[in-house]
Image (cartoon, rainbow, N blue to C red; front, side, top):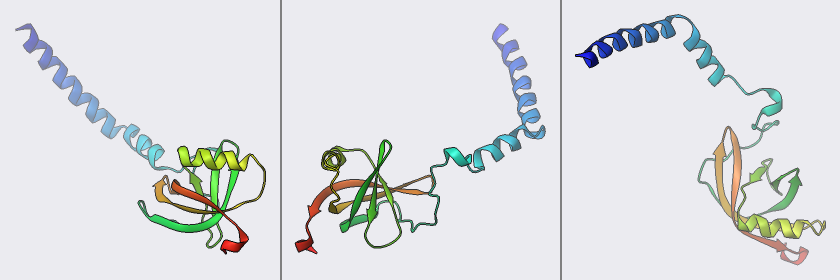
Length: 135
């Protein structure tokens, strides 16, 4: 019997809370907050208009260079205006070891493009240094 009274009291309270939430404007404020763009300083979206690739796009033999930026590494292809933040894995670790030499190297990469918050990322599968003779 006591449980029945608790259920009967809890159900109307829950219904009243849902109705209040739906009519008070709190839900629309939360919805606007979740769909509004991030603050300018915390944005992960690219600042310039870049060509975006679809999730799962396979890249093969793309030439370009790597650029270390704070604690992340970007890959800048020779052709096109895209840049990809490179996801951390063992292949990137090996590339970073070469970047410590501070010599401008040309790279040829294979990998898969991913997408998050309107920005493309690159999951490296292979990365090769190429020489001018390879061009």
